[in-house]
Length: 132
Image 1 (tube, rainbow, N blue to C red):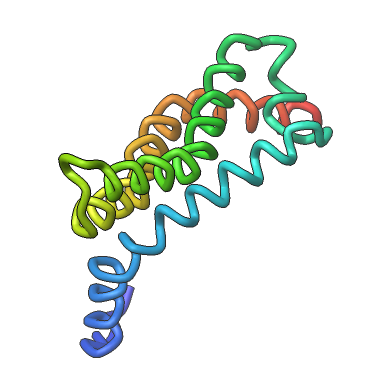
Image 2 (image 1 turned 180 degrees about the horizontal axis):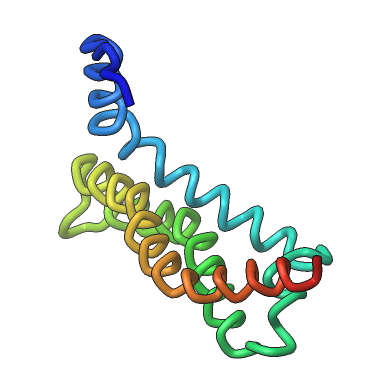
Protein backbone atom coordinates (compact mmCIF):
# COMPACT_ATOMS: atom_id res chain seq x y z
CA UNK A 1 0.00 0.00 0.00
CA UNK A 2 1.58 3.27 -1.09
CA UNK A 3 1.40 6.57 0.69
CA UNK A 4 -1.33 8.88 -0.48
CA UNK A 5 -1.25 12.63 -0.52
CA UNK A 6 -3.20 14.36 2.20
CA UNK A 7 -5.43 17.18 1.07
CA UNK A 8 -5.71 19.33 4.19
CA UNK A 9 -8.35 21.57 2.63
CA UNK A 10 -10.71 18.66 1.97
CA UNK A 11 -9.98 17.21 5.39
CA UNK A 12 -10.75 20.54 7.07
CA UNK A 13 -14.00 20.92 5.13
CA UNK A 14 -15.05 17.39 6.09
CA UNK A 15 -14.24 18.06 9.76
CA UNK A 16 -16.28 21.27 9.71
CA UNK A 17 -19.16 19.49 7.99
CA UNK A 18 -19.19 16.67 10.55
CA UNK A 19 -18.86 18.96 13.58
CA UNK A 20 -21.00 21.94 12.55
CA UNK A 21 -23.39 21.02 9.72
CA UNK A 22 -24.25 17.38 10.47
CA UNK A 23 -25.65 17.91 14.02
CA UNK A 24 -28.10 20.45 12.61
CA UNK A 25 -29.26 18.34 9.65
CA UNK A 26 -29.33 14.93 11.34
CA UNK A 27 -32.53 15.46 13.41
CA UNK A 28 -34.51 16.28 10.28
CA UNK A 29 -33.09 13.21 8.50
CA UNK A 30 -34.09 11.01 11.45
CA UNK A 31 -37.58 12.52 11.44
CA UNK A 32 -38.00 11.93 7.69
CA UNK A 33 -36.69 8.37 8.08
CA UNK A 34 -39.26 7.63 10.79
CA UNK A 35 -42.07 9.00 8.59
CA UNK A 36 -40.88 6.91 5.63
CA UNK A 37 -40.67 3.79 7.81
CA UNK A 38 -44.19 4.34 9.07
CA UNK A 39 -45.64 5.06 5.64
CA UNK A 40 -43.93 2.07 4.01
CA UNK A 41 -44.79 -0.44 6.73
CA UNK A 42 -47.19 -2.30 4.42
CA UNK A 43 -44.67 -2.92 1.63
CA UNK A 44 -43.60 -6.52 1.09
CA UNK A 45 -39.93 -5.96 1.96
CA UNK A 46 -40.46 -3.92 5.13
CA UNK A 47 -39.17 -5.18 8.46
CA UNK A 48 -42.71 -5.32 9.77
CA UNK A 49 -43.94 -7.65 7.01
CA UNK A 50 -40.84 -9.86 6.90
CA UNK A 51 -40.11 -10.25 10.62
CA UNK A 52 -43.47 -9.67 12.29
CA UNK A 53 -44.54 -13.34 12.23
CA UNK A 54 -41.38 -14.39 14.10
CA UNK A 55 -40.79 -11.29 16.25
CA UNK A 56 -44.13 -9.50 16.66
CA UNK A 57 -43.32 -7.86 19.99
CA UNK A 58 -39.88 -6.69 18.92
CA UNK A 59 -41.07 -5.21 15.62
CA UNK A 60 -43.92 -3.47 17.46
CA UNK A 61 -41.40 -2.07 19.96
CA UNK A 62 -39.20 -0.64 17.17
CA UNK A 63 -42.24 0.81 15.38
CA UNK A 64 -43.20 2.55 18.63
CA UNK A 65 -39.93 4.49 18.44
CA UNK A 66 -40.77 5.54 14.89
CA UNK A 67 -44.20 6.69 16.05
CA UNK A 68 -42.65 8.58 18.95
CA UNK A 69 -40.23 10.34 16.61
CA UNK A 70 -43.12 11.17 14.26
CA UNK A 71 -45.09 12.95 16.99
CA UNK A 72 -42.14 14.78 18.56
CA UNK A 73 -42.34 17.82 16.26
CA UNK A 74 -46.11 18.44 16.44
CA UNK A 75 -46.18 18.03 20.22
CA UNK A 76 -43.00 20.11 20.56
CA UNK A 77 -44.52 23.00 18.63
CA UNK A 78 -47.59 22.89 20.86
CA UNK A 79 -45.40 22.83 23.99
CA UNK A 80 -43.33 25.72 22.62
CA UNK A 81 -46.47 27.78 22.09
CA UNK A 82 -47.63 26.95 25.61
CA UNK A 83 -44.22 27.86 27.04
CA UNK A 84 -44.13 31.11 25.09
CA UNK A 85 -47.63 32.17 26.04
CA UNK A 86 -47.52 30.95 29.64
CA UNK A 87 -48.19 33.60 32.27
CA UNK A 88 -45.25 32.59 34.47
CA UNK A 89 -42.55 31.55 32.01
CA UNK A 90 -43.98 33.14 28.90
CA UNK A 91 -41.35 34.80 26.82
CA UNK A 92 -39.88 34.57 23.37
CA UNK A 93 -36.75 32.99 24.85
CA UNK A 94 -38.69 30.10 26.42
CA UNK A 95 -40.47 29.62 23.09
CA UNK A 96 -37.13 29.41 21.23
CA UNK A 97 -35.52 27.12 23.82
CA UNK A 98 -38.47 24.73 23.65
CA UNK A 99 -38.33 24.75 19.84
CA UNK A 100 -34.58 24.04 19.93
CA UNK A 101 -35.06 21.15 22.35
CA UNK A 102 -37.87 19.82 20.16
CA UNK A 103 -35.72 20.02 17.04
CA UNK A 104 -32.88 18.01 18.59
CA UNK A 105 -35.11 15.48 20.44
CA UNK A 106 -35.16 12.97 17.52
CA UNK A 107 -31.39 12.53 18.00
CA UNK A 108 -31.84 10.89 21.40
CA UNK A 109 -34.89 8.83 20.49
CA UNK A 110 -33.30 7.83 17.17
CA UNK A 111 -30.15 6.65 18.93
CA UNK A 112 -32.17 4.46 21.28
CA UNK A 113 -34.19 3.11 18.33
CA UNK A 114 -31.05 2.27 16.37
CA UNK A 115 -29.45 0.49 19.31
CA UNK A 116 -32.51 -1.74 19.67
CA UNK A 117 -32.82 -2.12 15.91
CA UNK A 118 -29.30 -3.54 15.40
CA UNK A 119 -30.29 -7.09 16.26
CA UNK A 120 -33.49 -6.83 14.24
CA UNK A 121 -31.56 -5.65 11.17
CA UNK A 122 -29.12 -8.55 11.50
CA UNK A 123 -31.99 -11.04 11.55
CA UNK A 124 -33.64 -9.29 8.58
CA UNK A 125 -30.46 -9.40 6.49
CA UNK A 126 -29.85 -13.05 7.38
CA UNK A 127 -33.39 -13.88 6.34
CA UNK A 128 -32.99 -12.00 3.04
CA UNK A 129 -29.69 -13.79 2.33
CA UNK A 130 -31.18 -17.18 3.16
CA UNK A 131 -34.01 -16.72 0.66
CA UNK A 132 -31.59 -15.96 -2.20
